[in-house]
Figure 1 (cartoon, rainbow, N blue to C red):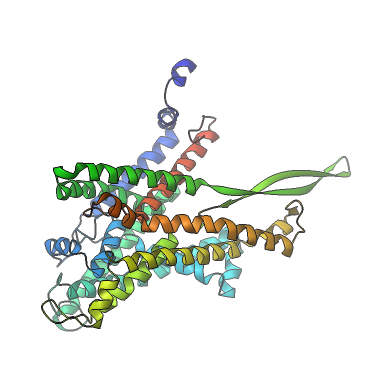
Figure 2 (cartoon, rainbow, N blue to C red; figure 1 turned 45 degrees about the vertical axis):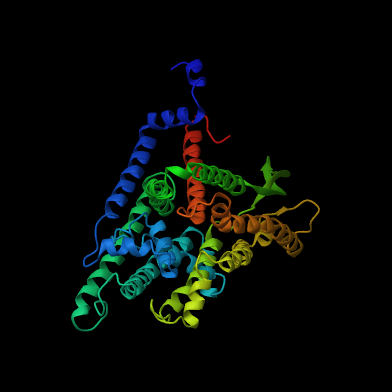
Length: 448
């Protein structure tokens, strides 16, 4: 292939051709795609004793419990809607990862393990996998109890006594095994494929559910109001571009360092410079998940005490209505909770990194700033200012479904803000890894 012919092709297309031209890269890409196809097959394996039609009707009801289950359905790529053994997706593993991230800076023993380099990270990862098993079992049983309360399962059919024991144990074990199987697939992708396997499984689930969601929205909206639907899609695209910009945005902190070289029995000092990239959105989508879980929880608890339809409403019904996604209070609290959780999570991440001490230990310094504690204070101020932009961005993305629905009048589609954040982050990370593989083989990248 001549250079002139290569230059006429788009960089992304040429990069894919170059990637498939390398046997090892082609194997990684095909392995990744094959394992994702297996995940999609597993997502359609039904769980014993479940009523799929009742589940689909429940998800379209618009209740607080339905919003929680709908979020799980988004992460599992429709597996929850199909009552699959993979209904929980890899969400219990994500929960275990978050718990371990919060415990490491609190428990001295875990701090010491985390400082042991690759060996310490491997042990923390092992603890995370162990923690995933009981979390998956508890979450699976909790979901079965909630779904029984919503009529998905017959009354008294879920429990650990009488005739309900064997079916309950079977379903809990099936859901736990499904989650651990997906985690194993993710680990295989991470080790032998391209990209982060766990993130790619979530990515594949979200992308697989988008065509069905858009099709249902089109049918429900009807051909008479296509203008509103097109405006909805245009605003969704604009928010997607904004997410890409803020995901890639970062503040560069210049860093100078000095190192010693020995030549001919004499020592020479050689200085150099680099920078620390402080990301605007360093917390990722975790604050949005925390805030949504916090908002859904009161409505779920209230649903257990609310008066049934046809009877006089009580206080639990009022609480349940306040925490519905149709309430203005719901979206206002969502906005401020995302702000707070973004600062909380970002500060935890930077405390674990301990940049000031790390720079001093490596003989590096920020120009004009005294090493050590003064550098740490300077970095904290910079991180706080940058996090304000990231927090406002995440809060805006979180309430974007409410804004877009009021602008376009399209009520049958809900823009999955968490899903968009995950899709953009995973896509960019996978593209960076693929470009790094191409650059190692002296091919031109495609992200610049």
